[in-house]
Amino acid sequence: MAKSTKTEAPKKSPAVKKAKASAVKRSAKPAAAIPVAPQEEVLLQALRGMRDILPDEQPYWERVRRILSHAQIEYGYRRIDLPMVEYAHLYLRTLGEGTDIIDKEMYVFNTRGNDRVALRPEMTAGLCRAYIEHGMGVLPKPIKLFSMGSLFRYDRPQEGRYREHTQANFDVFGEEDPILDAQVIQLAFRVVRDLGLKNIEFQVNSIGTPESRRDYEKVLVRYLESQKHRLCQNCKERLTTNPMRILDCKEEKCIQITTHAPQSLDYLDQESRDHFKRLLEYLDELELPYMINTRLVRGLDYYTRTVFEIRSTDKEGRSYSLGGGGRYDRLVQMLGGEPTPAIGFGLGLDRIILEMKRTQVKPYVEPKPRVFLAQLGDMAKKKSLRLFADLEKNGILIAESFGRGTLKSQLRVANRLGVEVTIIIGQKEALDGTAIVKDMVSGTQETVMQDKLVDAAKKILKANTALMGPNGIPLPKPSEDDEEEEEKERLEKEKRHHDKR
Image (tube, rainbow, N blue to C red; front, side, top):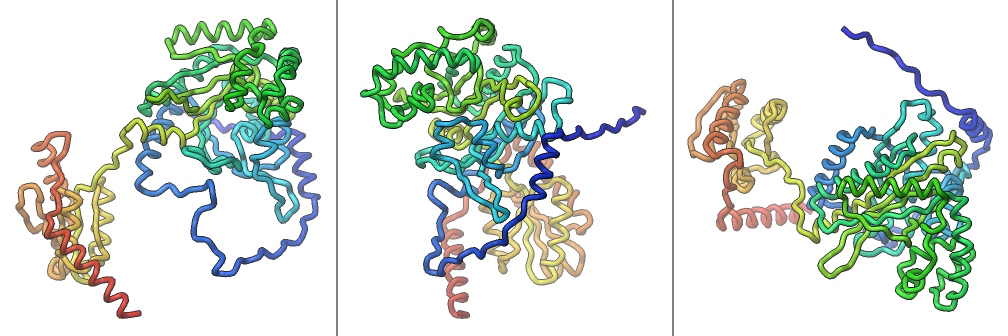
């Protein structure tokens, strides 16, 4: 028998201890009273750009979650969950001046303790903060991490784009070989392929190191200055704050200008040039669908060398971004950690699910209940609760309608669900310790002792599976009489409720 080994948690860095000590010394201001709006002013609706994901949509999300979980396990990534609120300076420090996120989109506010905090607009900065804070640098490399959760950006809501949206991230720390870049892109392709999406294309580029990028920016600015009068207003402002972001502008007139702009690939340092060349060789070996887009820069300043984007094209030729990523080899060091190469990508799950619906990808199919438990009378209800737990514990998918009073209405529910077995317990059965077990396929029924109920139900289910095959049985449809009776019962229930009031 192998001996268990106890490992100590990595020690936190001195920088983290110092930051925590200063946070403790900071005096908290008294909490101000929160103003309450008058009752008539309360709007019973979600905030603009936010939404509810209703039960009918959950099968799509469940399919996405399952495929992400399989990919995470098969590629050796470990799950990490991060807080949705971070100190605002974390993003101010990492995302860069002149970015839309910092200038226009970030939710920033003061806490009652007078801390300046932000709802996370992206995952990577918080992930690197956690990497440093918890001493992950001492772990064996590469360190592969998977994260998923809500992001918040005060952006203009549009189809598939919300102010609160869900993103899944795959990140690798500790390796700079371009084979990791290729494997990460391969993983992204595998996920979107398994989700059933087609017409997928990867756009790739290299933006080099911050040093080589400065040389490129000088040439780019000279070119854009000559075209300044034709740029959109936002890009005129970016010209002095973050000129490379102009390459990412979606305005048609700016696209026409940047199409003829100097290309970043022509100004790469030799190491970045070799890195990109080897990446393309790996992608060719994998036979992945990609194109080089020299205008691709991504929207965040921390990227270095490889950047890529995953896009889907519809029948009309319109292109949609499903996600993207790249290298951020300097980010951990920028935040005070040891020099650590890293690469990762994020997938916008809201947009992906919209694409799944648009291309008629089938959602996850929830397993259907095969047994229905009906009861009649107070004593039977009490017994049914325990029997429901016994059946569920034995792996039987079971449905019930405990809130309905009549046996007829419960059997209508059983018929509508298309169950194979209906178990009926009345007052007599509750006293006798028995139950009526009805085979809904053959129409036969028998009375069995309650302690034999699980075996009786499993026997019928096994026989039906052998009879009908692995595809299951056709679901019986409710008759028109059943539907009319159901509506009549609903109206009578509403009338009784109204009379009581």
